[in-house]
Length: 276
Image (cartoon, rainbow, N blue to C red; front, side, top):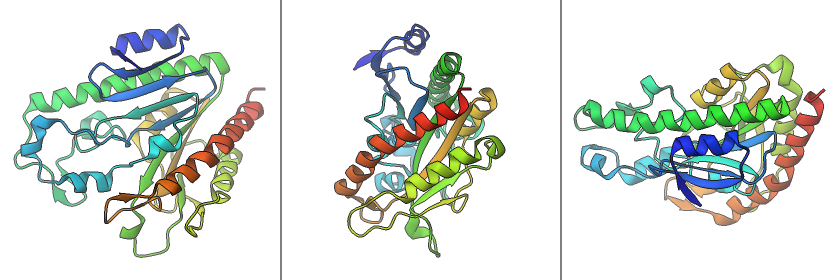
């Protein structure tokens, strides 16, 4: 894996080079083993938290982990194109617009002992902007090359905080073209619903049940690229004990093995249906 400046990463994409890199400031990783018309993303996978922010933060390391999406990169790591955040959403949230990407409070609890200095915010937002510069270059390259593209936007959510039964998988589709991509969305939902999971975990899948797909990552791509479908895909944290901070590797592996095959099949079907 190379350590590259953003301008070096974008140039490699424009040149259609194959590479695996970490951004120069260690804020995200990108891997391109082959130029294909689909991308896997895990924008909330990161857990890094700048040391200069530690003393200012009121949330514990566990509080941060609880709201992040651990293992979401691992679930799709074998696919040809993968981009993932390394920093915690508590520093800046890649799934929020720049003006709201730095939290004042998080899930009802004040985040900072006192307001962050502007220079601290600017340092974080520079990383947010760099990530989206790469995303825009990447999707532009794939749409130019293939005309259509599908992005698997992987997330997780804390199912134990809900006071009703919630699905193992939720697809948020309120900000994509459902008339045009409805069949692709439903096929993806069915694939997730049929996923075999260990430990007697039932795989259920619904659309806009717990979340509606209002994230900035989806909106950013959808606004700029009309032929790219972003599938905001949330797995309930059945792959860990979210209260004890214990990950179940056998469940993560089961998801990964299934998606290694079925995600590629879905992407191929999407491309074959829309290329004409």
